[in-house]
Amino acid sequence: MVSGIEKHLKIIDFHLAFFGCIKRIDLMAYGEISIATASRALSEYRERAPGSVDYSAKMKAYIIKKDFIPMFSHDAELALKYLAYRKIERFVSESSDIGLARLPSLSATLSEVNVRKITTALTLSQPISLNYYSASSDLYERIVQPLAVFESAGAWYFRLYDLDALDFRTFRFSRVLSVKSMDAYHNKIPVDTEWEERVIITLMPHPKHPTPGALKLDLGLTDNTVCNMSVRKALAGYLLNALNVDTSSSAALSPIEYQLYLANRHELSDIPSMTIAPGFYAHDEC
Image 1 (cartoon, helix red, strand yellow):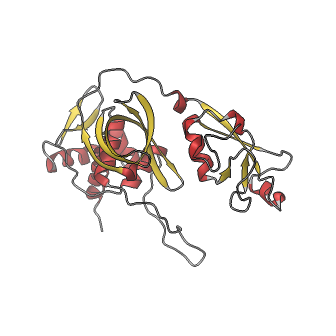
Image 2 (cartoon, rainbow, N blue to C red):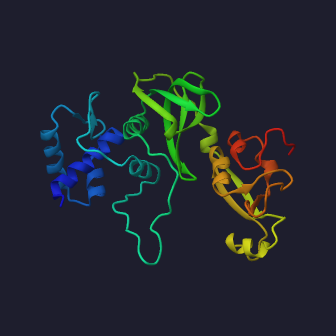
Image 3 (cartoon, one colour):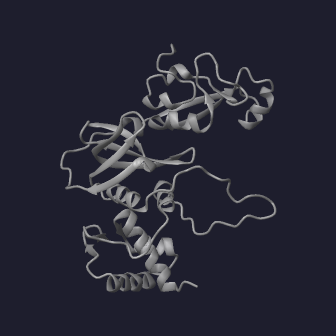
């Protein structure tokens, strides 16, 4: 059984490894402990890992040094969930006679080292150099500034600013081969309007489905014929892909496989991420 102090040390190590820093209030919230216990745990960590962290009076936080090495191994996906949702997950229930706790997944096992370097750069606003395997342009190296993380259809992605191309892009964590820290980037990064702006996605039962009444129940439709969802502009295509929505101009996809249809396709035609939405082809006329 893990002792209380070891549990607290692991929480500290988790925050330092993936976020590059930890405040006493973070440890108190995550570990559900008092201020005195948190202070003792932080002192114990510094004694066991001398030279690993510095205290920043300006940030009121402990910051990792350049040669920081975690004391423990951690779950990279747990860190991404915490960063994306501020959701604390501790234990996953075992399967019961009622049903499965979780269905099998084809998601790749994420590299703990790569994930923590990316998430640390994100939380500390630092650039990184990474080797990335793109589906469209094969392997290449880029200097980027990570900005946000999100999950879609069982895969984890991060939004970034490409300091070479000077534009915003979305990368998949599983396609990152290596990551290196870089010196601070002093130029101001522009506002990511696609991330800040939201759009409305209007869904309806697929017009060619044999039993649209059942699909209306899935969408919670009673008096209305469509369902409206608000989403970040940059994530529109990812959401439609995750929901298996037919976004073709003439409802051409199988209504059995794609039971939902995008009713306002014409309003979303200029969004770059729509190219990954099912049936949304760049040469289609809106």
